[in-house]
Length: 232
Ligand SMILES: [Zn+2]
Ligand SMILES: [Zn+2]
Image 1: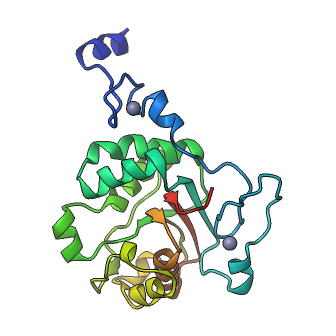
Image 2 (image 1 turned 135 degrees about the vertical axis):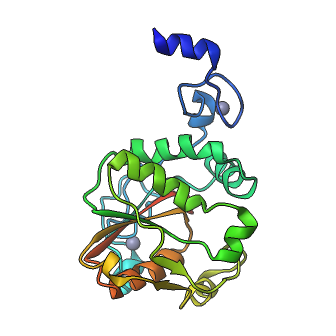
């Protein structure tokens, strides 16, 4: 009753196309344009396999070099409506998109076994440019849903890096090398950490963050990203 009344006062609309939508979600048409990652994946880095018949097995990259995190998962493929939504959220400052994007992650991953949420930090010059850290907004929403504490002060980006989007493969790795540091190691000591980022591209950023967190005494790291670059 109250909800119906509130809906009359404040009709719920899709933050992407302004069509009718359920509370805080994308409309059905926009949601249908998001490719969720539901098929077989590498159990370590979360890379989706093109063949849907493939059973889960480590991907070639994880066999050659074991990542410093236990498991990375992403809600959807970084293309179509999800790519469009992330661009508007991140580069056009449309922070009202945070809520439906957080819901997509939480619907895909309703629970986790971590003890602390940590967003991938931005360097202060980038933060000034953008005005907000998109990963922090996602992490704050997820911390509420998972009922977990969040630490966004002790993992720092100490070096301004080039935009990863402009770089390829190896250059991404060298670009983020030494870019992160931990301020107070006690904050991460013996903690199982859930690291949050918006997009998993080559994994260079989360790999570097995970290394630094492990060095600071973290017991283990799981990674959750909203989207992932994949050929699906
Ligand atoms: Zn829509
Ligand atoms: Zn893998």
